[in-house]
Image (cartoon, rainbow, N blue to C red; front, side, top):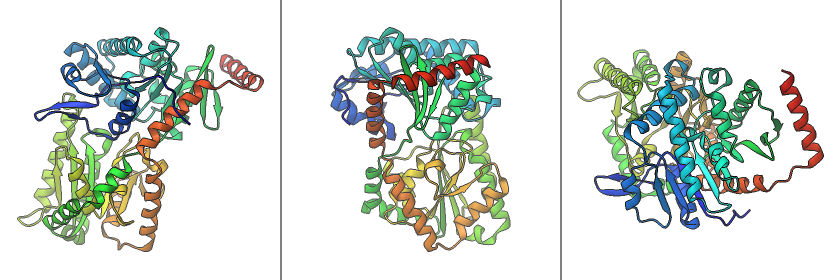
Length: 483
């Protein structure tokens, strides 16, 4: 299906490029990679709420980039406060970490209003506006009130919070009503769609469950909520995996680590990633097994994140203290059982570690998807290696052939790490990895982006089969009001 001709408007917290000491460069991440070609073709506008305004104006791109004019205080209260101090922990199940402060909520509403105003100003008549992520959840309804002619899509990139947790958010109703201003709301996997349905039940919002998702009547139109699993730049990672210089670097990494079995974890330093719990599980393995002590090395790449937020600063200290304790107990002049790299690695460097690793250990406590699992699979030219994956990550729903583990089960986590580290590889491992590679190849980020936009166009052009749908919606409204 072809997408519509009106120019595309993207609204996100991040800009497609960042200012560095070496100049302005493309921002990292699969989402940016997927959206840039679409924006170049559409010659539309990218509205970046949290971007450097000077960098935006200095860009030389075939489309416009606009940054919001925000004070540093408003930006901090919106991003570090309401977004990452409230919505992020709430969505990942860490209610005890949440901080609901009235001034931060006001900043969140202010930034969403500003983003809606800029989008309304720059969107051509009948344009498609695609809004991204939890930092801007109020924008769809605010924008629709200003520009009812627009086609509006929204993608929520983290887990949808369970209804019981969402109860504690003082502005939960406003959050959901904001999202329902979109024609199509995308979530990663079906269980997040089911969680959204539970939220609608909790709030008494009439809806109809359909095979492909949820339909919510909104006056003369309706909003759809559907699962759209995001992917990665499959060919880009596969190409790195075939690169001779990357392969040579992988051999060097293996040699530098002592030539034994290599386990790899790659995470932002976030409490949802289960990094400390993973390190402690590996420490227990070192206590129990001389073979692990002699042959297995865990490489933990931890990208520093949100260090203006106290919980993230505390986490980094805990990670570094745990690694230090492990090194003190089990390390020596010629042997380091754990290597921690607290920095961002570029794709070339990461690919070398993906090739060097006998197993990837991806065990977040909760994660919207987790694309590290996808990258590890796509980079390896042959169907070898192992993926240990948390069953609480969205990726587990689309990668069932991985070795799945409960990250909250201390004994089970340790046993699973021990198995992928030490058990001889078998034909079953090759079969698993071949199946995983096939799944990842079908989940490219380009297919995700173009498919979502095509579906968005289809949704806005739908004409409900009058009698059947009206009957179901009327019945749903009666049931909801009767509660």
